[in-house]
Length: 248
Image (cartoon, rainbow, N blue to C red; front, side, top):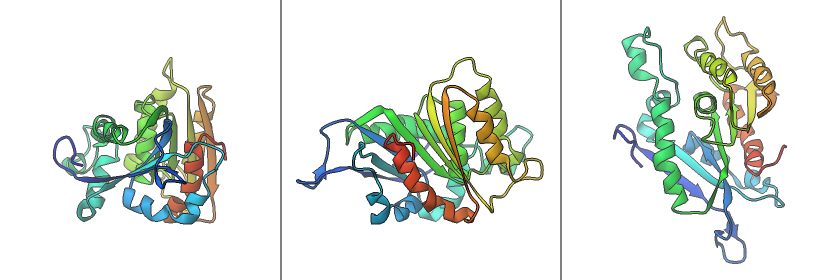
């Protein structure tokens, strides 16, 4: 698929639950869906062992991965997953970052309809998973477009970006007079980079603040033993169970 402005290209992969006796997509009923950013890395982590961890007694989710063009992956994900930058930012930063709202719009008007045309989706059971910059994007979407998904997974989110600029979005979200109900799973690693101003426990404190909101069910997990990159595959089994509507 191509971005709405033609600037980026993506590979969207749809994993359907199968009817075991026929080995074909099961479209007999609407399914929960999980949208996974950094799709190439996510697909590598979706091995047989991980998929066998899905709970057989709960609805199996449709798994949608969204991957950037591998030749431009680093620069394109930095653009797509980061919130709008301040007007005071350097011209280089304004060019390199700040495309999160455009990417959110692309998911809403291009990717979601593309998926809905190919499988039966329950629009009230949508999960968004992201790691690192992708986790930052998941939180950005929750704070600015909370109606887009019912469940969010932010695995080791890059809160340090632009000295914690996303915390302004968080504050505005908490001050809203109305918020849709939702679920948030936040994960943190021992090696997560943070700015001097935020501190090493910024992710935990974010989760604590959000857990005070009655509309939002928040769970936090600290992977003390893992480095930043290892949190990506470690987070996926819990994300899939959340997409099934399970608590653990």
